[in-house]
Image (cartoon, rainbow, N blue to C red; front, side, top):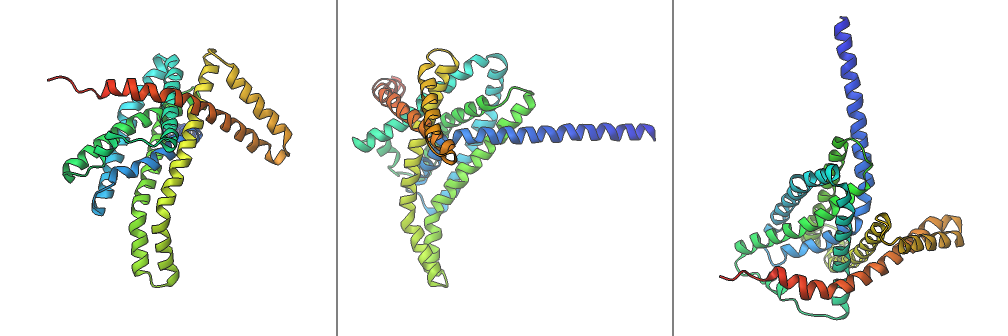
Amino acid sequence: MSGLLALLDDVAAIAKVAATSVDDIAAQAAKAGTKVAGVVIDDAAVTPKYVHGFEASRELPIIWKITKGSLFNKLVVLLPAALLLNAFAPWVITPLLMLGGAYLCFEGAEKVFHAFVPHASHAVDEDLDVGDPAHLEETRVRGAIKTDFILSAEIMTIVLSTLDAGDIWVTAGALALAGIAITAAVYGSVALIVKMDDIGLLLAKRARTGAGRGLGRGLVRGMPKLLSALSFVGTLAMLWVGGSIILHGLEVTHLWAWPYETIHHWAEAVAHAVPEALAGFSGWLTTAVADGVIGLGIGLLLVPVVTRIIGPLFSKKPAH
């Protein structure tokens, strides 16, 4: 009997430790998830283009294929890589994070530049040319998964940088949980967005009440505006997050701490100059605007470098 009681005590202790670890994983994942808003919003705004031109019956299957590819990117490729870097070369994480921040700045600035100076993109024109639906579907899915890999790498690096140093299993669990949750949020939202037109049309035709039919018509009319709003917010968030990552990286690596410290002092000054109830938001807004302006500047400097030098190098086809 004493042996059984001892065993039960051990089981209870293990269960307690396991429960604590689960709580730690959930808390770390939640903390990390708030840092990737810019990437998540932009991803949700951009992904619907990959189902453009297909029959409605293929939209959700395509999104599901991209979702599975995204999970593979995060859990099978990037998570082990992140753990290895964290264990054996943690000094690499901040430069990688800054590189990802520069990518976000470029993406955001390129959208701003395109809005003010519209220009054609042969790659986009070719991508939107439907052609053979079966072949195009596989091409689109592969392209979406490649794009997702870049965004997922940035997401996982941001998540890793926000986690407290500790047990490797807690870190792995938090990375996995955050990756799954973010993937579900992004592609669940995308699925809802791309089917919203169909839902609206169904309501407009078959709803039993005038209010229901009006809601359906409103959904159909409102979707283009929602996508535009998502794209706009996503662009702002990418510039803000990208600029913040680079400035924080410069401060952490002691390469150039002045910009980060100056913006921090501005935010404190603004927070002290407004009523206490608005202090927190005002300080955050000051930091976000300054980070976004700097992110836009960095991105605009990168636009010609990426489009005229780096892009052509990677797009060159090997000679036969």
